[in-house]
Image 1 (cartoon, helix red, strand yellow):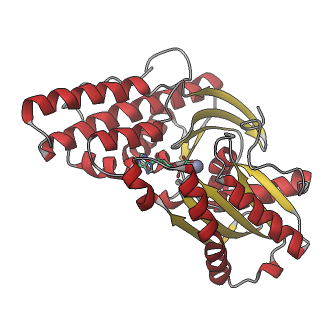
Image 2: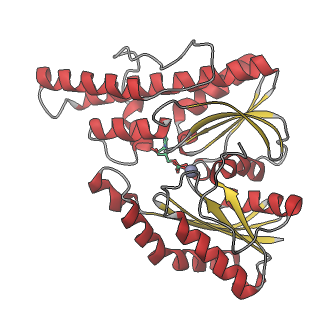
Length: 341
Ligand code: KG4
Ligand code: ZN
C-alpha cells in the first residue's frame, strides 16, 4: 500500500511517499526557517501563507522522486496539530482532503507526536513493543510508556517550555541564529561544558517531568552579567562555553528521566524522536547510559528527527490497517487529545 502524507508543521512543509509503512520512496522537506529568523520565532500567518505557496511543489517533488502519480496512491494522510493555535495544519489537512476526494481514496489524520515516535519503526525494522519513548521537539517534551500500537501512557511532560524551545531561546540570547539546536550543537563542540555551573532542571527529583524556563532564565542572567563585564558581543570562546554548559544541563535532565523510567517499569528499550533527538550530546549520553543499563537505544537519523512526513505516512498505514480511514467531513486540523489521552 502506497501512502502519500503531507504535513505543514510550524515552519516545515513536508510530503513523503512510503510503501507498506516501511519503505521510503521519497521524503521532501521545505524549511521556512530563514524566513522566520528575522522575527526571532515563527509567525503563524506567514507560516500558513508560505505552506500554501509551497505545498503543491513539495507534493510534486515527492511524487517525482517516488516515480509515482497521485492516481497511484492508495491512501492519503495528513498530520494533525496537538494545539488549536497551530492553524498552519489547515494547509496539509485541506490538501490531503482534496486529494482523497479527487482520487476517491481513503484519508487518515494522525497525531504529530505519535508520528515522531513511529518513524522509528521505518528505520529500525527490528524494533518492537514495549518501550519508553522520549519525544523532544520545539513544542513538546513528553516521556511515554509505549505498551503497544496506540497504547500509550504519558509518564511526564514539560511543566513550562519545551526542550527545543529552550534551545531556540538560548541560541537567540547567544546570538547564534535559528533554529537553536543545530547552532548550539556546533558552538558547544568548541566549548567547555563545565565552564558554567548551570543546573540540570528537575534532575534527581522523584518524577518524570521536565522544566526549562528556569535554565533559560539562568543563562539570560549569566549572559547579561558577562556582557557588563566583557562587553557586547561576548568573546566567541565564552559563547561556546555558554552553549556547551547549557547543552550539558538541558540534556542531562532528559537522560536521567529516561533511565529512571526504564528502571521503574523494568523495560529494556528506549526510543527517541523529535527535533531535539538530533542533538549530538543527547544521542551520545543516551547511547552510553543504554550500554551501562543493558537497555537498547533507538533514534532516527537526524533528518527524520526533525519534522517530516515519513513518520506521518508510516503511522497512517498502521492506523488505517487497525481502524480504517477517517471521515473527510469530520476530520479537523487539530486533535483534542495527545496520544489519545
Ligand atoms: O520536531 P521539530 O522539527 O518540530 C516540532 O515538532 O517542534 O523540532 C524542532 C526543534 C527546534 O526547537 C530545534 O531547535 C530543535 O528541534 N533541534 C535541536 C537540534 N536540531 C533541531 N535541538 C537540539 N539539538 C539539535 N541538534
Ligand atoms: Zn515535530
